[in-house]
Amino acid sequence: MPSGNVRLLQRLSDAELLDAIRSGQDQAPIGELFARHGRLLLGVCMKYLRDEEESKDAVMDIFMTLGDKIRRHEVTHLKSWLYILAKNHCLMQMRKRKEVRTTSDPENNPSLMELPEVLHPNEKGELEKKLTNLEAALKQLKPEHEKCIRLFYLEKKSYQEVADATGFDLKQVKSYIQNGKRNLAILLGTGP
Image (tube, rainbow, N blue to C red; front, side, top):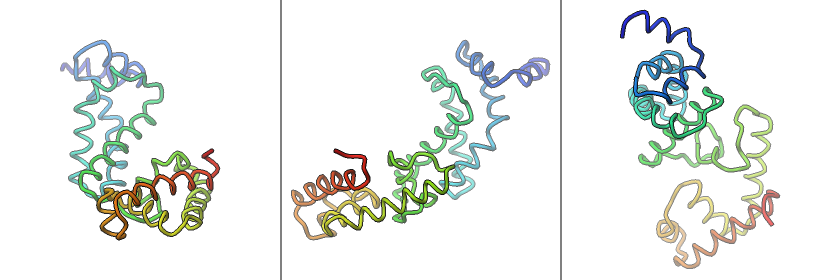
């Protein structure tokens, strides 16, 4: 691409770059978004994946599919959208590796970040309160419900793996998880 076009792209706002991506097949606007926001995404990926090479690969994967995603979604707040896109990509990578940790710290357990009660990690005080409430609510469940919920949701075990770990039969495990989840929602004030 001629250097004049590069300078032109550098002058465009993010919204104008998004419009350029939506209107054509040219990769140059995506390259400019990469130049502007690649470091942000690398930081997000490093936070979750904790490996520089894997994080760099993740950022490249994200930018390889970015054009299609921008054409399919209405993006109004680019930085927030890119952050969520990177976070979700990393969580999928981690699920593939089965490296989700079993702590109640959202920095180390991204599955907790997906709970509807834990949406905005920027609000540290509120987040800590919600996590404390979640932990307290888990402890109020019947022991068999708590154990099955922790294994299934926090440790990402299958029904069969939970049954093997607890000694409960498969039907009991499914029932304990369903009842425990309902009771947990009630205790947290998000259920019926």
